[in-house]
Amino acid sequence: MRRRDAFRALAGLGLVACDTRQPNRGVLGATERLGEHVQSFLLSDHVPDVDDAVSPPGAFPVYHVAPRVPLVPDDWKLTISGKVGRAMRLTLDDLRALPRIEARIRHHSVRGWTAVADWAGVHLSEIAKVVGAKPTRYVELRSFDAPSFESRGYWSSWDRESAMHPQSMIAYEMNGRPLSPEHGAPCRFYGSVKLGYKMVKYLTEVNFLDVRTGGYWEDQGYDWFAGV
Image: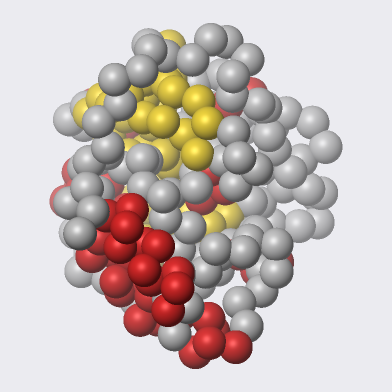
């Protein structure tokens, strides 16, 4: 059975939550955990092969929840914490010093548009080695993209299998150039197996956790797993 056919079958059984406009209800809520495990399994070794050319400038809409494009704080560092042997705060140079990965990835928006770009960054497994991360089930991602000074920034959380997927990364380059403020500078979490709202820009924290948390849109009823 092809992977996409498997997702269709799961949707028919109520194991894949496809309606991102409202909270999971009824059988979707009752089977959410099972659906999460099945989707993680289906995505764990699937590496999309994108042969299409890179999309033209402007194909990726600028999106942020702050009233204006967030700019990198002068004292920015990426905090790595949670279930780790040693919490750390990494600079962009620290990230660039770690082994680099590259991938051409098709972005899938929940709004229906797609676009292709080349991404470069560091795989989460390299970060996990540096901090001695425990084999937790989840990874939480937080940012400095905040709708107001009083609120916490945009955030999301991933299952560990998807976060450790071969094409998932803390990305600091897009199409051969450092990330611009419009697209999440100095770094964002990116990958090929999730919908766009899971790709946290303006990254400030990566937390390895045993307990599944939510996210900015997930807490408003969007599908938590959001696999593609």
